[in-house]
Each structure stands twice: as structure tokens, then as C-alpha cells.
Image (cartoon, rainbow, N blue to C red; front, top):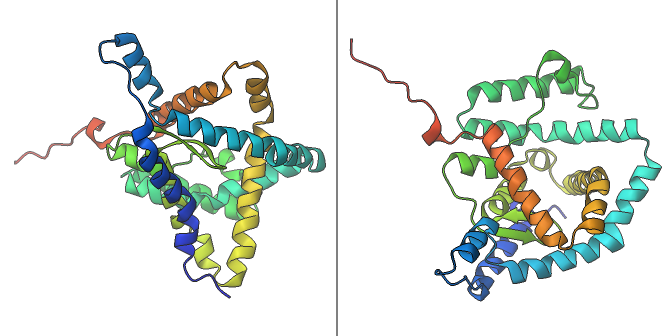
Length: 262
């Protein structure tokens, strides 16, 4: 039978995680305001849900050790690097409509035009996205999601959030993930039973491909870090700050064009 409510099914995991996090938020204990150092560290981590997040991290690590990590290793062993790159290019090309939507929501019309050109070039000259031909025409690949859009709108990231089977996130990016999944046009274009046959293998391939790309990084953190949870949390915040500063200029920080009466 066709899926009756695909939007609900795609958004449900992220939404449940957010509801659970909110319900357990009262368990977090803030440091004594008189302890300036502890208070500064508390806000730098931005992790009031740390006990719950560490529990989710432990489950994620177990799943990764038993299933996802070995699957990524097998994927690397089985699929030659050039073919993996072709698959990675194809997955990135399918992501372009979501990037285009968020470019427009952010008021970035120039970047939206670049995204449209990149998608058109890679879908034609690049053989349905198998090759990143747009790079040769000067259209570098840039991704944008609804989490970035909310940052442009001035919405704070909110606390750190470890999502089950997804990994590091925040309240804002957790909601952004759900919106990105819901706004992905391909499951809506391919309706009925065929949608599931296309959507789920694509998502599974995306997860495996991402994990394969991070094999060395994750292995190094797990091998050398005394606290992998804290290391991944710090890396997430640093990465998101760089991404938002590089691609998402808040409306409040943009120059204002004044129109004077003549």
C-alpha cells in the first residue's frame, strides 16, 4: 500500500528526539553562578542535557561498532574509490533542490542562481550527477539546510543534542533536519510504493558513504581521545560555526540599501 503520510514518517525520528530532550531537560544541573570558570565552561559546551546525550552517544557508539563501522569498511573494500566518488557526486546532486530552497529562504538570490546552474550542468553534462562537471565551470558545490536558514533568521542554535543514530546536532539543527527531509522533492515526485524503493536505499547509501569518508577521523578520536563524547561535541560546534559564518550571513548583518527621495 502507498504510504499514507510520508511527511510524518520522515520527520518523526527527529521530532521524537526533540520532545524527549525537552522532557528530560529538567534533569540538567547548572553550576553555581558564583563559580565564573564553571559557568563559562557550561555555556561554552552548551550541553545542559549532557547526561541524556551521553546515554544516546553510548547507544550510537555500540551501533557503530557492531553495524555501521563494519558496513563502511566493507563498502570501502568492495567499491573502488572512483565508483565511490561517482556515487557521492550523485547523492550530492540529489541534494541540490533542498539547497536551492534554503538559498531562496535566506534571500541569497545570487547563490540560488549558482545552485540552479550547478544542478543543471551536473544533471546534463555531468551525466545525472555522476560527475561534478559544474566545478569546471566555476560553480563550486555548497550545501545549505534549514538549520542554516534559521541561523540567518536569527534563531539561536539552542542546546547541544545527540540524536539517536544521527549523531551530534542541536535543537535548531534537529528541527532543520526534519524540515530538510520533508522538503526533499524526490519522494514526492516518485509516488506510491516506488518511493520507498528509491528513498530508503538512497538514504542508506548516504549514511554508509558519509561513515566511509570518516573512517580515519572516527578511529583516531576513539583511539586517542580520553573523552570521545566531548571531542565530537567540540568538533561539531566548531564545524557548525565555520559553516554558518561561511555560508549564512544573518539578515541583521547585511548592508542596508537606503532609497532617498529625489
